[in-house]
Length: 321
Image (cartoon, rainbow, N blue to C red; front, side, top):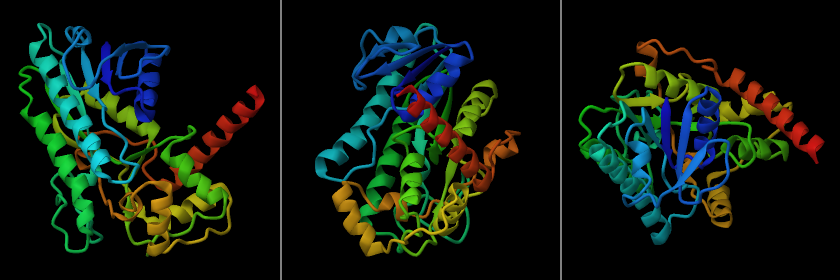
């Protein structure tokens, strides 16, 4: 197949492009900063039509992953960029597909599991409670919900008759590469700081990168459409998540961080505590009901595998140096 991945130069996009390229597909990444990769990288600005749209015309699959990282302080400028990078890119991808003489048969569009409510009582499947009105959540968390809703609305409004559309409400994708979420969490554990965050009750939804890639492959090949939660079927509390990660790493202790400590740390690290304190209890009901099988359904097995791969990657880097 020919697969076009707008925004595919980020961490998750690179994992996906590498896997699909390895499968033998013709992979084209659309990027604001084109570079030399094993697959083709074509320039675009993520907001307007241009020469890049010829790549969409005649391709088989579009997987739009475009969006500025939310790992930052929610300043006015950052909030504007977070919102516009998602909404404008989704609109223009839809325009390119609508204008194609040979449109792709499927469009997978990134969304986020953060759209669901902050809750502890029950998991959210695809029909779960959306966030924004929780009495137990800070008002500042409403921004992420507003962005997610606007993002999906732009996708829904795209007039792409003949193209199957899937919104990927993804949990955090964990991979062993340097600079990712898992690398950051493991770094805390390695330095004795990988204890409970806040009261530790908040649920953490996650997915092993191999299952993320497998889910994308599966969704391309099957007739599913609409909203799909892309998350492992067994979210766990923050306290349990970090305990299992410490065990996988062989660490006997992790210093806990209270809410006020996290608030201070977030200021210095230029990020937001919502990323660690919001309870995201998300389950992939549609994937499971339609027959998808997870390689890593439980966090313990995933954590051990990722720690092993992280060690192997570190050893390879050391040998190369």
